[in-house]
Amino acid sequence: MLSQLLDHGHEVRRLTLPKSTVPLHCMAISAGYEQRRNEVYSWDGLQRGSSPFLVIQHTVVGEGRLDFAGVQHRLTPGQTMVLSMPHAHRYWLERGGHWEYFWMVLNGREALRLAREIIDASGPVVTLPATVIDRLAAACLTLIDKPEITPGEASSAAYATMAALHDGVFSADTTPERSLPAAIARVVAHVEANLGRSLQVERLAGIAEMSRGHFVRQFTAATGMAPSDFVLERRIERIERLLLATDMSVVAIAAAVGFADANYLGKAFRRKRGVAPLEYRAAGRLAAGT
Image (cartoon, rainbow, N blue to C red; front, side):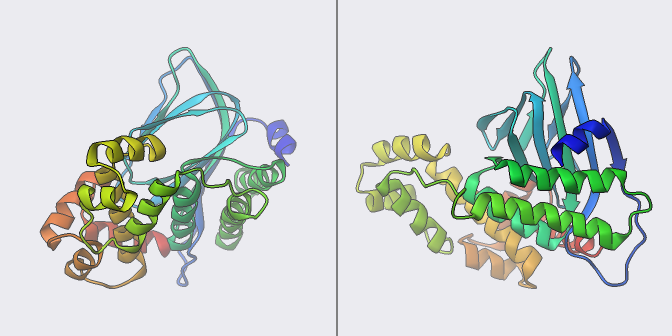
C-alpha cells in the first residue's frame, strides 16, 4: 500500500464531515502526502490551538528534525513521528533540506489515549515493520482519495491507523527492550507508582543508591531529562488522562498527582500545555464528540 500511496502522488485533504449525534472517539481530521524542499517549514506544538489532537507523520525521503521537550531527534526515512498537541515540542526542516512524508491528523478520546501510551512506551519517534507502515499508508490513502467519505469511514481509517501503531509498538516481536540501567529503571518505576507523593530528587537518589549529584547526571543521561523535569512531565501526562477520562475536580486531581493545590497545578499545566486544565478538558470532550 505504501507504493500505491506514492504512485497516487502528493495531495492534502482536510475532511469536512457532518456532525454526528453519536460521537466517534477516534476520528480523522485531515491527511496528506507532501514534500518540502528548500523552504521554511516549522511547527510549534504549543502554538496550534488549545483543542487536543495528534499527528502521525512517516518519513519517506529526506530528513526532518524534532525537538521533543528538549530532546533532539533526526527524522530519517522509515521513521514514524507520533505527537500529541498541545505539547512542548517543535519539528522543522533544516535550511536547504528536503523532507518527503505522509501524515494524518486525528482527534478523539481513544486516539489520544493510545497515542499517549505509545509515546510513553517508545517516545515520539518509532521505527515500524514494513507491514505496519503499509497499513498506515493504506489508511492515509483512504483518507485522501476516497470520494464522499462518511464519518464512519473516516473513523475506521483513524482506528486502523492507531491499531497499526499499537501492533508495531507493542507486539512481542517489535517492542524494544528497555535499556535503562537497573538503578534508573527502579527510580522510574517508583515515580510512576507514586505520582501523588513527594518525589524530591534526594529521595529518588536514595532509591537509586547514589549521591544526589551522581544520580542527576546518570538519570539525565539515561532518560534525556533531569529528574525534576521527568517527574513534572509524568504528572502533567497523568493530569491529561484524568481530565479526559474522569469528572474529577481540579482540586481532586491536584491531590492525586502530588500538587500542593489546584492553583499551582493550573499554572504548571498552562506553562507546559498552553491551556488551563478545564479548557483542555472541554476541548478534549468537544473533539471526542466530532
